[in-house]
Length: 144
Image (tube, rainbow, N blue to C red):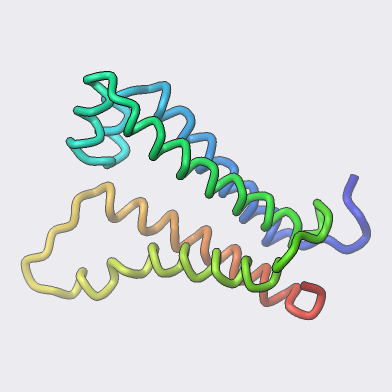
């Protein structure tokens, strides 16, 4: 049940991080075709195809990171108890998402640069999730 004081932006950000975590779980089960489709690279896809554990381990660790980020966003939103270092962790998460989302921007103005479609849409998604985190952090700054 929601308390009197909760933040919608961080709740959305946490939900999006949770969806990203679940997507990574699906990629593990989807195998090589999913690794290729989601831009993990041929090395990861080939390793998954060969039955190596490396892609599963790396993707599971990435899943764990996004799951922890979701929990921190939900904590900042007031939906979960206060977690240690909540303010600096949420600032860090916001910066990582925004950095990942915006790193493509300077490259787009370079003549002849044609990024893969995956890079464009994943950058846009990262920037959007980062923006949701940033808005939520700014709205709840004093309470964090």
